[in-house]
Length: 204
Image 1 (cartoon, rainbow, N blue to C red):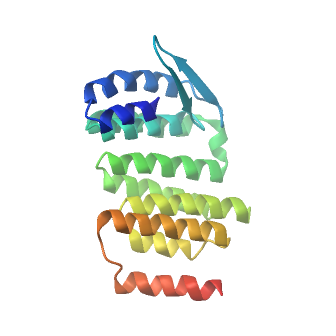
Image 2: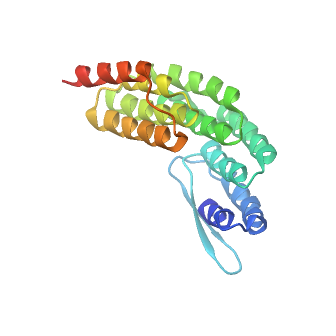
């Protein structure tokens, strides 16, 4: 459903997007189990909505509100998402909690709240460092790296890549960072090149 709303926003039908998003928000508040898939039926369309948990689903909807210029509503929903994080027992798992916090942080970036986003990402990164399973840890670090890059924190995101061991996630992270560099039009500076050299030489 959120993708349908994005489609309307992209073709300039903001009003139609705003009609769909409240329904998506209500569905998001029912997603309470990791990996749960929700369907919502409307008069003419069937929408698929997937969320790992209520907070991640709320963050997804908030991002869509931000896309159509409703930053205030996005921030309101993201605050709900942060509160929901505190109320779900599954968030005792560092990997799950870190990933969800990174998702919420991404929503704050889209809502223009960069400082708040970086505060949440710092918490997510701290949790990620406590993950014992190397494979899960690399996956979560990749996800956090992507969010830092979207926040324009290229040096920080590159530095995190140096802590990713599996080549697969290391490459994915670098591709995401490269994409964000391209989207921003920013050149790779000397500091970034130095960190990239460390990554390349460390992988040999």
